[in-house]
Image 1 (cartoon, rainbow, N blue to C red):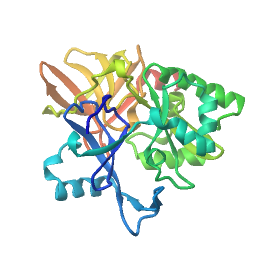
Image 2: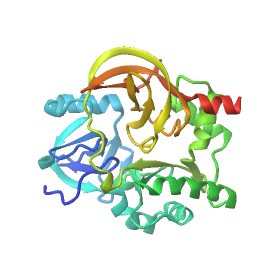
Image 3: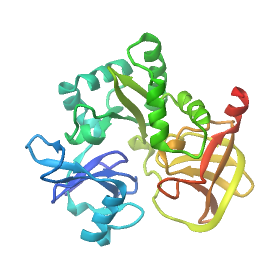
Length: 312
């Protein structure tokens, strides 16, 4: 397959087996860093427009399937060769199609009122495998993300977008299962302004780099140096909502903190004091602190000490 545009984080693609993969990396010139998400299954609970049944595969099952059928693709993410790709689904290019039949997505698009080509929807809706209760996984590109957060706050005030209920926040906390208290989790989450509801359906806003911000982060593991707890001031939060979230810091040894778990994206902003615990890795001449080295990220966290002191 010839790709006319770079494949970006949160795009989806299919292979010859009809398997759907979520793009999980930016360095996709020769192979696409991704995670298997949906596979055909006669007993599956999802139907595409051709009435083929699919099922969603969990994280462990996805890695097991790739290890079994395509061991050469195994790694930190699934490295699928471009010549194995049959179709690429880009959220920003599919949004007009989606909102034409999905009233809640159309309502969200109207409420956010973002510039053209700066918003899309990923996940099951993008793949045409959503059900009645599927969440809306919104994608906002580049500089439009900060504007989208402001629009979300305006939507809450105007009543065009609903805030999460207490019970839904508790569900999110249970799902994330972070190494912080519920009270601390909520304090950080509410100011992120990247979650809400449209007519009772949960949605979130996910950041993806615009084409001019590419190439993005290269998905490579460094030399592990051990566990570390640090405090430092954040000097650059431009990619704090990216995946991985990147926090440049003012520290004598560690140059940046990276989060590979969605829980700690947008956690700390410029000028704030950050506290983080994770694994230090050597990358070239730099040392980075990595948070989210395991699926559960137990014993790893990022918090804004400035926020906690202000609210405490």
